[in-house]
Image: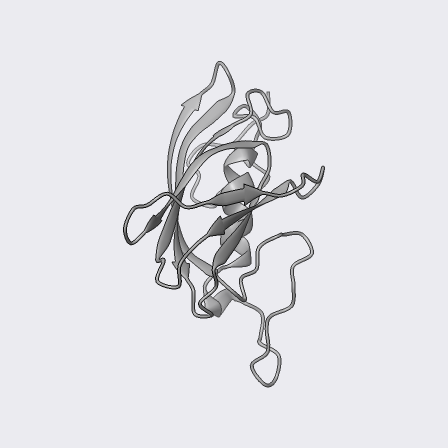
Length: 159
């Protein structure tokens, strides 16, 4: 499940709804930078995340899409997300459904690597198609998530 979090969690947590954000500095300045993320929520904020994933337990691999609804008040031309152990197959943007150009940054053993996606000022969402690296030790399908959801019905156990 950590793999699932690799793309989505950093973006979702660093761009949580305004009510969950720390107080803004006086004068309406930018929120403090998160040193554990490549994202830049002061430019583009993720408002919602929809996941559509297939799980291959034998290969310990996730394949699917993550659709992120964006808030681009600054009119930014790129959105930066965090990835770790992911094979990015493509990105589309809405409106229009066209392919979005993207670049992957230099990998870091702790932070993973950034993905910088080209967007237009009117882009409302991006859909990232990806798969996880098979049998990635720190992000395999067989590993317990770093944080179990409060709504879990069964306990999460490690193998």
